[in-house]
Image (cartoon, rainbow, N blue to C red):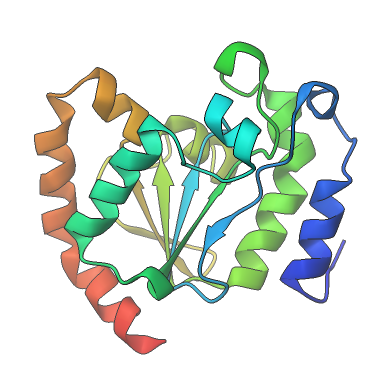
Length: 186
């Protein structure tokens, strides 16, 4: 289904009942950041804090993502963040295939309407929802459907495995020219 605007799409997401997760969600978690981002971060699913506020990446993982964005040197008007699904799975479990499938049209339309130049997939679930799991190498940029796509560690993974932070910084350093190039274009 096509939507004329982000607002129309977000209204549809807010009223979605495609999968059972809507029954336990406090609110849908749709997006934060620019309406016209050069860089789009895609995370896994809302957590407890996100479910309570309706804002993606507002908890501890959000603070880590803020640090990543700051380390990348991105201005606020250059990025946005969404999740693969819009409702919190019970007990913060990983979204299942059916949930990812049901939310996929919303993910695709968000990408189309936001029209980023670079998509940063945060972790394996974002990769699975976007291209299929195991298709991308950590920190290596590929072009997929006319978009540059980069897979980085999910911020929560960095909190639990602090040794990955150095690797993440290396991935960012190796790809810095990408977002410097794209963030100047808009």
